[in-house]
Length: 333
Image 1 (cartoon, one colour):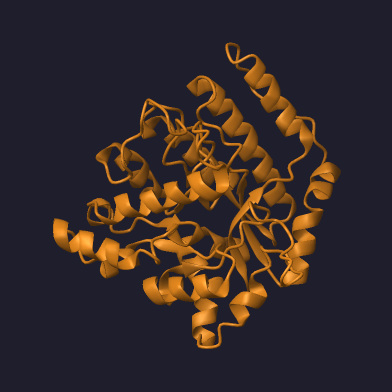
Image 2 (cartoon, helix red, strand yellow):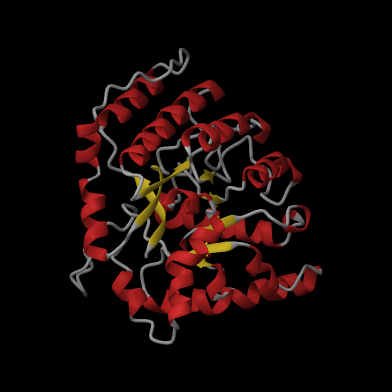
């Protein structure tokens, strides 16, 4: 079995974005969504994902709302909440229609300056009422502008970590929109935010205070594997836990698209801490002119890593995902 730990609903029916457009035009008068989307429309919207899954041999998607569209910086907290509810409820419908293929992952009603305790009811609703198995957490809801958000290592985030442990669900740290015109959204801002998230978490007391907490850093942690000794040296210099031990306390997804990067990630953080992921459909949903394959078609690349054992492959493609997203196991029964 191959479980793809990082996929987004970037093909949602246009009614969803039409609602968002109305929200943004009239931010002063937020209203809940009244989407009229049929099951047939949802089926058409998922044809590309199911085709890719069949061609690549991927069995299950951990499926979340489009990350760049979370847009937590738009409008008031109520605008963010209504948009979040609409996105999550659409994901829940898709998961109910195809429970053998889709495990739902929610976004949270984050908003600049709004404390995590205000998001917990939506997380609890998604997990308890809608059978979600995890959530995405934006480390920078303001999109790079004020009010700035505390470090992920700060106790400001502790109510969220506590609730995640209580519900036994993980989060993937995932940035959304940037308001900085000097940073390309997916190739600069995303990667920088995910790298920074790892730096802040791994030098903090978060995993001492929450030893059962499960956090995933996407896209191989940005430059973490490449800047290895820079981080090791800083941990030595500042008296933190050895970096090579700290990295084993989080999980890293493998949406990095080339063999050399995959191999370096696995060697640096260990087989037990890597999750297979493609970001389907994401930033590099394009054909590689060198191979003729889609950049996101990473199964053949992963299969070409010849030094992995069968047990290693099982952990990366299935076992680790079921360990981290423990609620998947009950879905498979």
